[in-house]
Amino acid sequence: MDHLQALRAAVGAAHVITGADAQPFETDWRERYRGASLAVVRPATTAEVATVVRLCAQEGLPIVPQGGNTGLCGAATPDGSGRAVILSLQRLNRIRHVDTDNDTLEAEAGCILQTVQQAADEVGRLFPLSLAAEGSCTIGGNLATNAGGTQVLRYGNMRELTLGLEVVTPQGEIWHGMRGLRKDNTGYSLRDLYVGSEGTLGVITAATLKLFPQPVARCTALLALGSIGAAISVLGLARAGLGASLTGFELMAAPCLLDVVQAFPQQRLPFAEPSAPWYALLELSDSESEAHARERFEHVIGEAIEAGLVEDAAIAESVAQSHALWHLRESIPLAEKEKGKSIKHDISVSVSRMAEFVEHTNAALQAAFPGIRHVIFGHLGDGNLHYNVAPGAGWDSGRLLAQQEAVYQLVHDRVHAVGGSISAEHGVGQLKRDVLPRYKDPVEMLLMHRIKSALDPQGIMNPGKVLA
Image 1 (cartoon, rainbow, N blue to C red):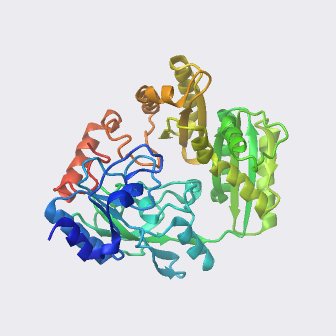
Image 2: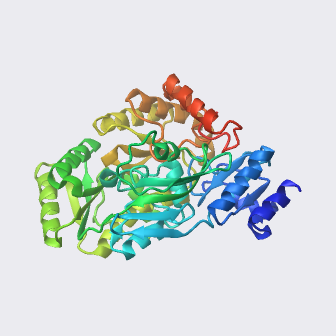
Image 3: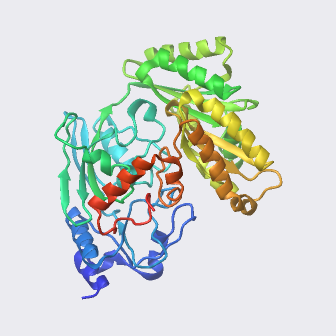
């Protein structure tokens, strides 16, 4: 029996896709990476995943796990050899169990993030992971990249939102680790090892996720600011005045919002003259009452205005207005894509050094590449910026992309110089694989290679991703 016949016998002929029909799976969302595969295999159960992995292990076939294919670093795209099996987990899409006493939800890897959010909402709970691709990204992909999003400030990344996992090892064994325990000090934390491993150590097939009480009230505001320093000061006031109720603090450079309203004219900025260079989107989630939330929120914003930190403020007066403000923020990546290709960075810098980093890096880029545009936005509350470089006066996408490696090195060197990370929430994938050793401690890289060799000695799990 040849490889394809064996795979068809494992999952059914209809769920082994080859030829032209496989091409959408072989290209990443940004259309930056294109590969080739032996087949796309779509198992429906963990047992079927294990069978497929065992077949691939026996034949030495590379396996590329794939969820919603919304990643930004090429981690779910095969190489060009045509030998890899793309393991699509989209059919593993069941919510297995919801436990409101324990505040946990068991979801399979192919569940769409929005489906998990809705399942939690139906029982009066909150699953707080929120990001622009939530209508198409999957829980497995969120786990593989340790996704962050807009509410990390209050709830943490995907690793902090996960209690247990079910994983198929590179040998086709199943680790049944779906424990819903907050305390389990019985050895190494395998959960933390697999979350963020980008499919290089095994296939995550399901997870036990934390749920939280639904907030009684939310308050949202968009603030116009004169500088990043002012934004950091407002963040300090908000943390002091709102504590754990502060669930979002998003920073956006003015060009980001102007790009959104240009690309999507139906969206509107809430200011008559949006002339400030920076904007911050704040959100408070309160467990007491609407009146209590509003009083605390307006007090903090009032303090910021009196201190001269805020040039203008728009506080949402309804749920619809709140959604409109968040829609502006969430539309920035789509507006970027409408304007053409840019050079994207997903970096993490301590909040205390954020203003210094942006000022010095902007200046260095303008000196090296005069006229380029800075498209900067992200999650200031947890130090994560999407520091993107786009064509400006005298530039087009082709000319800019020809300078891509030089731009990457300049930005990443600056990040490293201030003690930051070149990847905050998007992962490493293919995009940053080759430069990772430049910025990681050599012993840290050695330990990562040892872990990979120990768990995947054949090297069949998502080869060419994370580690060279």
